[in-house]
Amino acid sequence: MQSVKRLRRMRMTGVFRSMVRETELSVNDFIYPLFVVPGKKVRREVKSMPGVFQLSIDEIVRECVDVGNLGIPGVILFGIPAAKDDLASEAYDEAGIVQMAIRAIKAEVPELAVITDVCLCEYTSHGHCGIVRDGLIVNDESVELIARQALTHAQAGGDMIAPSDMFDGRVKAIREILDENGYQNTPIMSYAAKYASGFYGPFRDAAESTPKFGDRRSHQMDPANSDEALREVGQDIAEGADIVMVKPALAYLDVIRRVKDRFGMPTAAYNVSGEYSMIKAASKNGWIEEQRVMLEVLTAIKRAGADIILTYFAKDAAKVLKP
Ligand SMILES: [Zn+2]
Image (cartoon, rainbow, N blue to C red; front, side, top):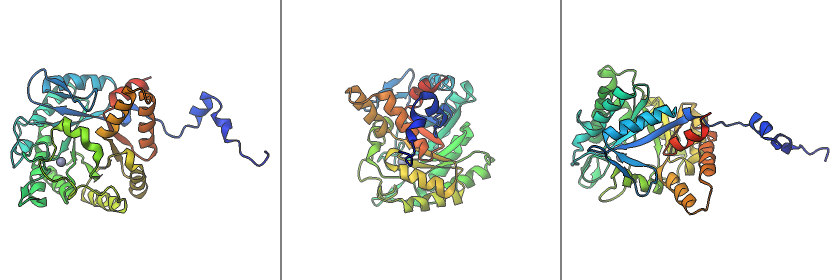
């Protein structure tokens, strides 16, 4: 056994294992997604996402106090408007649901970073991410509205803009409109490599944003591609993205690693609804140990290269990790 390296030596005790541990999860890594709905005292559990709720503004403020107390640095907001139309009017209305929620949260928990998802799909009557003409989702017109939406979020006090649409040129348009209006210091976290994924299923229950016809394959990426992800990410960086995101996370760990290695940018990964719900469902059935698998998955996403993890597990994980 002389020539054999005894790699097990450093695994023999908990102290040794922690001494050589390469990846350490921290509550600072997390962003917690929240869904805001009209009304008062609304706290409606999303059926396909146990532990995740649609919240009215009063309830979301209470939730944000809890999130802040757990040490989670930020939330990302998704809005479900009272009314939807073809032009997604409420998306860029200064009195829209997200704009009001931002003001309410910042008034109560100013130190919590409020990041806002920017896209039209929750606001259009047809559920698509942009304006539809002759059955096609048009790019440039949609980008204009998305930029307007971003500006209203910044004006309401949002700390960071996160465009999730995957249309071409949106980061540039958002950067320009923010700069022209005095928001030079508002960063953009772009959903840079976002795949057309089956793992978004439960999210669409939560955000009520299922397309009424067709799908999102004309703008979101083909799951089979990763060279293309580098082109998408490179383009968003060139247009001014401060943080680049890969979404989903778990089936795309290789993409996260390639993006991190290639660009060395602050890199985020979205541990999406389907990834969350699979773990919740399997553990409800007694098939896996929820807490262990949750931590293993989050650690894997960080090990793959993510600096920031958007996750519905943020509160659960924060409770485990808190010293
Ligand atoms: Zn969308």
